[in-house]
Amino acid sequence: MKSVTRFIEKKLGLKVNAEKSKVDKPKGIKYLGFGFYFDTFAKGYKARPHSKAIAKFKVQMKKLTCRSWGVSNSYKVQKLNQLIRGWINYFKIGSMKGLCERLDSNIRYRLRMCIWKHWKTPRNRAKNLMKLDVPRWAAYNIAYCGNRYARLAHNGWVHKAISNERLAAFGLVSMSNNYAERRVVCEVD
Image 1 (tube, rainbow, N blue to C red):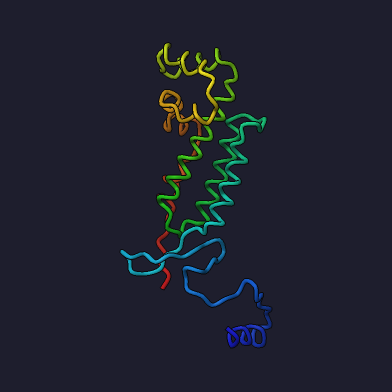
Image 2: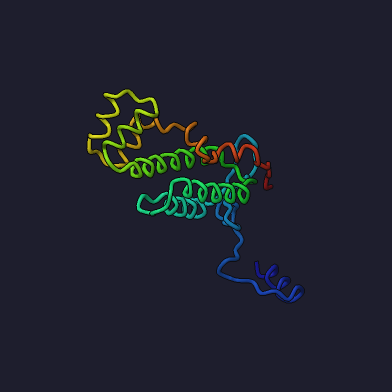
């Protein structure tokens, strides 16, 4: 480390930040938002988003799907699409298929809560559920049950009414599909 630092500072005229620079195994390194892990099938190290980068994405996603944010759901979807596309374009060299599927599920769940709150009254909720092919008895039971938003977003009838296909038709970009299209295979030795 000392010889590398000396070379960079003397020959190249650059300053090395001692706090950020270290010599370590790939598992212990965070570099430009990427972390590294050993893939036993490929028998080599691969890049993936670091846990801090994932946490930062989740915070941004939660801000954009906040139920108390007074904007339309179409605007929320537009902003979410920008976040998803940007994140996937940056981390496309990382190995994150399962992560994208989990984050996709979480985004859709939070959007269902936003839509449920946007419908406001139980009468309006029942009417909208019936428009989305939920039987009348189930629509009224769900709309007037008084459960919290998070619990109702996991309800089977709400999930059927505001399905993944309907959210995609509404304009929501699928994170896992976007990743599958743009993925670049990169291995670290």
